[in-house]
Image (tube, rainbow, N blue to C red):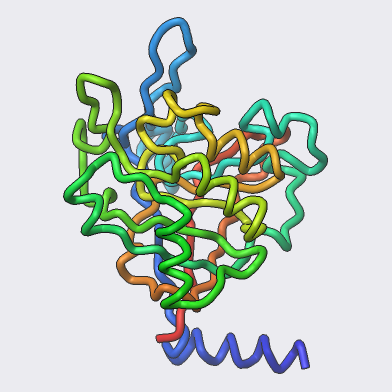
Amino acid sequence: MSGDVLQVLAAGLASGSVRVVDLSQTLSPETVVIGLPEPFAPSAPFSIETLSRYDDKGPAWYWNNIALGEHTGTHFDAPIHWITGQGLPDNATDTIPAQKLMAPACVLNFTAECVVDPGFLLTVPHVEAWEAAHGRIPAGAWVLLRSGWSKRTGADFLNFGETGPQSPGPDVSCVRFLVEERDVAGFGTETVGTDAGAAHSFDPPFPCHGMMHGAGKFGLASLANLDQLPPTGAILITPPLKIAGGSGSPCRVLALIAG
C-alpha cells in the first residue's frame, strides 16, 4: 500500500496534478535581517563572494563563499533557538527527526486585517472562526498566518515606528491555545520572525518563541506565496540545513498541493 501511495505521488508530480509551490524568499545582500538594539549581538547580513567563475581561479567551474546568520531570509527555527527549548531532546537542526520535517499546513488568511492594522494580532476567536469554516486544526499541522507581508521590501518589511516594529503575529493566548489545545507542529509567518513586532512588550514577551520552542515545536519566518495555498490540504516540506547544534537555518520551504 505504501508503495502505491508513493507511485501515485510520483505520477501526480509528473503530470502536474500535484503542484509544488515555493514558499521561500530569494537570499541576496538585499535580504532584510532582523535588527536588535545594543547590547545584543546583531546578525550579520547575507554576503556572497565569488571564488571562481570560469576564469584563472577556476577555468571550468563557478562557486561562491557565503556568510549569513542562521535566521536570515526564509528560515526554520529549531527549539534550541530559545532558552525554553534548550534542554529538550532532539532540539537542534541536526537532531530533529526527519519525519517531523514534512507536515500538513493550515493557512489562516488575515491579509485584509493586516492592511488596516499592520500590528494585527491573531487571537483564539480568529482561529476558532477559521475552524468553523475549514475544520479543526489537526495535531501535528503547521499553522501559517497569511498577512500579505511578503509583498513588502526594505524598511517597510521591518516597519519600525515610534514604539518599535509593527508587524502581525499571534497574541499570548493564541500561542498557548495552538500549543496546548491543538498540538501544532509549529507556527509560520511572512514577517521577519514568528512573533508580532510588539511581542517584546507582551506578558510573557515573545510568546511564539518561548511557548512554541519550549514545547519542542518549530517556527518558519519570511515565507512567501502563501496566497497560492488553499486553507487546508497542502503538505509542507521544511528541512533546515543539518548544522551541528544549529538553532535554525535558511530553508527552501516547499508546499505540495493538489493542482
